[in-house]
Length: 346
Ligand code: FA5
Image (tube, rainbow, N blue to C red; front, side, top):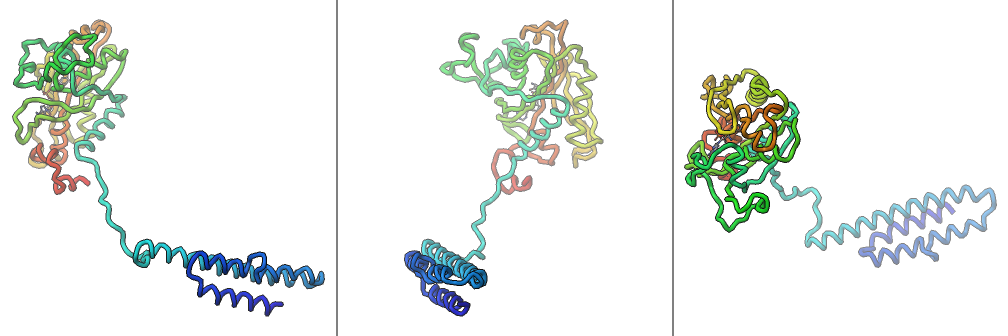
């Protein structure tokens, strides 16, 4: 019996060599393990054996069955490989290298934005957003910027044609629409929609009719900050800006608040930064943002009582900060999509 089974496996092995497709494989399978197959016949023969012989022969048959299964599995792999090879037109060579798909990476401006937002998140700020097409009221009036203010001059601000209707038209009438000149308009939208206390940072795109040069772009990005609570003070403003600057430019960086003017803050400041880690700009005072305490008139215009609430606000330019962090000398590099420039930040 042992010899007979060994012969059966050897025959199956030899026959499998000439099988080349699925139909031939099915016929081969039937000849061995089908109802009338050679292995099936051997298994049926077990019934005629004595009680003593059965476990011995059963073991031999199981071994033969295992060998036949291995032959069938190898055959299936051979046929599948042949099928893939003919589908591809050439034999499959799994050792060939694949086509390279270039991996993308984060734009330096986006990376700086995420870092700055994370810094303010550590201080309890959440993220707010507002539209890039803004009403004149949100961009100027509500920020205590009167109609005769130079910022509202057609030379500085991009106005939309009258045919564009405001999303707030039912409430605010047929008001002029502008491309927002700063993210301070998000201060107003937040003041109108949220109940204090809150701390928000609002990143976004801004537009001005500035002449384009190495440090000015007609389209740039700002991050606005607004903190409204009871008794917010200049000490809070200094504290958070100092933290921000140290997180961004290193522990040696210092800040200076220089008196300035914005219609929506009182007092107002330009914040300058000085750091020993800025290459050729090291240890020089560099202006990086406007800031101040929220003007009580703005709180009133948004329906808050200035005797109850106070606030601080700031607005920084994302491009200028990214330029300082990486020593980039021209703002236009950010928008030219030159991979030789961008790959440096991969
Ligand atoms: C403002 O826009 C104020 N809204 C900032 C502010 C917010 C003050 C809250 C007080 C309270 P300013 O016009 O200085 O301020 O612009 C702020 C920053 O935006 C600048 O420091 C600069 O980094 C950036 N910025 C302004 N114009 C351009 C431009 N054309 N291109 C690139 N960055 C610019």
